[in-house]
Length: 317
Image (cartoon, rainbow, N blue to C red; front, side):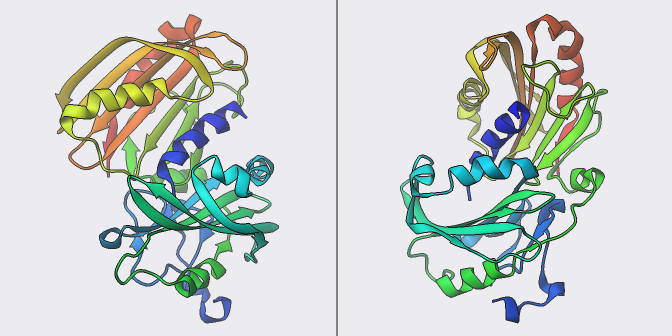
């Protein structure tokens, strides 16, 4: 599960009536198996898996994970667990019917971010083939914002369908890789994070296989003067590893973008094994995408150059 745990940390950077809905109104964003009828004024986002009204700062984020992630998420899906992420909830989880789900629950609340208070709704969906969170985020007091009834109607329209193929999910990502450098695609999470490895196992323990994570973000790219500091902070805060230190840092311009590269060492948080870690970020005017390699230190020579070849082939749609 370490592969999933690290991938879920990227997803946190992203956080966000049945009778009236017709099946052909349901939209499945980013190759997801989770769809819904978007609330009034919201359109498919080009930055993340979900819908947004950028002018009003309103979003519906669809975060999809493996089916076996449900139990761990459900254990924290309560006022105490969500408070750890900065969300203050109203009441306890309530059962929330979702077509195609085995179990689903809703929590309502609010969260402060960058000095702004947001109203939030979160539906946790457990299905046979997937686990998902559908998060609605609306700035408090925004003029012409969605009503509670608008949000409830949209959340009542959530549908789980048979999952798209991995190839379809990769095609829907907001970025492209023109060269995977021999790494094997494993999974797409939330329509914005792409996991790859080499070896027989999709989920490898104790860094027995290399892990490559490609992740875009719904946030605006940092200003050029702050990009190196931003990249350093992102590098130092990778989860699932500890004692992270950078050995090399560089910045260059190519292909209409700024590329910030950092590599160094760390230890596996569970086993203590020494690791080699590399991060390459592509920054454009308003968006960015970054690639991360985590591999045993003894295998640095085998994978470092291949990873750099893969990362430098990243483009943003």
